[in-house]
Image 1: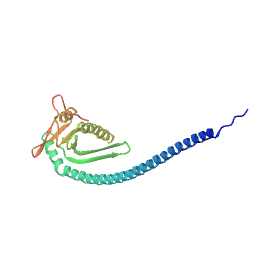
Image 2 (image 1 turned 90 degrees about the vertical axis):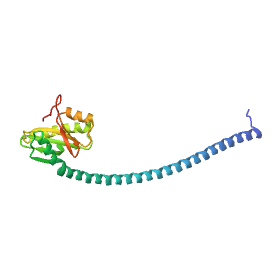
Image 3 (image 1 turned 45 degrees about the horizontal axis):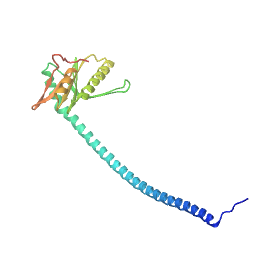
Length: 212
């Protein structure tokens, strides 16, 4: 026997359906509003990223300009070494018994044997070569770098049948006691300012000049 629903019952079902529709409609409205807010935020972020890109481009240009200026300063520093520091080095090392007849800034580019290095001041005679590294304020890394540089110079000299003894020195405008002691321990001569000129400290005692 079939049962039939009364009108009130159908109305209850219809009301329930409309309630579900209204709830879903409200949810869709909230979703659309949320999507609009997200789109607005994305647009703002995009503008901010574009502004950041422009700022980075400006920074890159500024760095390039600074690099060019530093390059010019580097050239001037090289000229200062050539015309002021190097001649005085010859005199000062002569006081320690070295008679160097040549003094130049030197760059080695040996692609065949992958030897690349630069020496601020290379003092030479028939028996010995003194490689001088000059820094404003030498640190331990600079001293380690000079040790590696000396190894490269020795390797390059051997390849060219250069049997001279190689020695090293580190010069600094400001030399801390710790870095000075470290350089002397590694067998380097230390060159530091003294009044209107500079002094050369020879490794002595437990330290001694290292030869390559």
